[in-house]
Image (cartoon, rainbow, N blue to C red; front, side, top):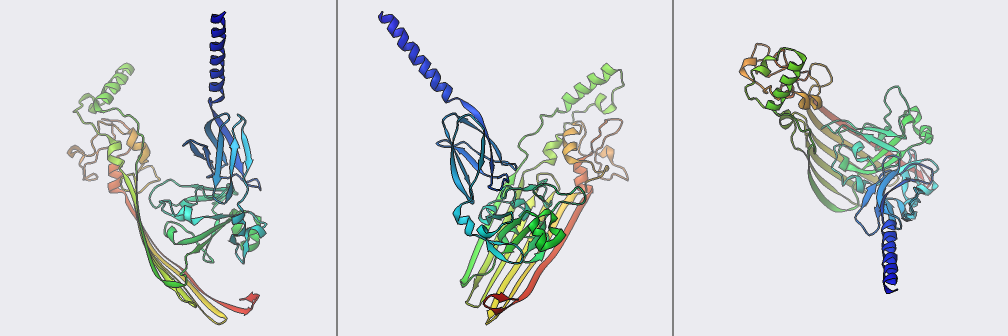
Length: 447
């Protein structure tokens, strides 16, 4: 009898443990987060409470995270109330509520500034404190993941322009880029503009923007305001950032001897005569990926002087950016100077904004058959071909760069030769500025 009771007790304990393990079993929890107007929320942080597990929602507001049934998900995003969601095993479809503090934010919509809670159109206010924590080459790159419905694509090459689409691509003809307004002027905030000079960013997403800017606002509007001097003693601030990048994973390529053995077997099985460079293999072993790929780096330095009195203020900033790409021969550098000033007397106020920028981009010529594609060539070229050799020297090839021929057949180009022979340098010098006078005709009216 005692044995039976002991056996029953052990069985009950085992069942309880199995039930507990089943309850705590990890599973993929899926969900979608949206705003009150139904727009997907990108860049929202979703974490399992009490653990280090955290994911971020994608451009469609979706997330997937491993979490046990009975645990709690903590959802946080800048400008929205934090949420705690109990995991029951079902998918989530939640609406995030804007934080009360953000409803009093002032939003610039072109012809006036209004409080966000009084605005009926679809807008987003981007927190520049978050964007300036990122090491990026241009302002459009900094917008990635910072506003719902704003998609940013870039190839990552030094000096390459980013493509921004608001609420998807609205046309198949021409480009779908939004209209940019910088300090009241239509301009493109490409890589020639220093993103560290930006004070605020507003994104107008819906058709109401067309009432202000016309047909040019068909793809949305991004309004950018740069920093101004503030009342007080002159302040000097400086910052320097350095980051590095590399290709994390590469294909495990054949060496020269392995390629020769495989190629010989293929040709012999097919009954073809061996290529002469394969038949007379001399031990050459070229790893093209090691030669064309390198550790990239970005250096970004900024110095700002600002200050002012009761009736005037000024801000002067200088910056230098250098970007060395992970591909050989790809580099970009930019030097920029900005001077923003403001002075008022009585009913009159005059404001000046000016920016000077000089940038240089170095890259091999690309986009046609002759120069090929380095990402294809570096993994597809033959390891038995040297980078260069005296036997290849001719009047048309004085450097003796190796290339495919009937002796060693390949559809790839020599990426080292392309980086040396097809150099392209692009220089951009840009001046962007305006001066305007504001006259206050009455307490409620200014021109």
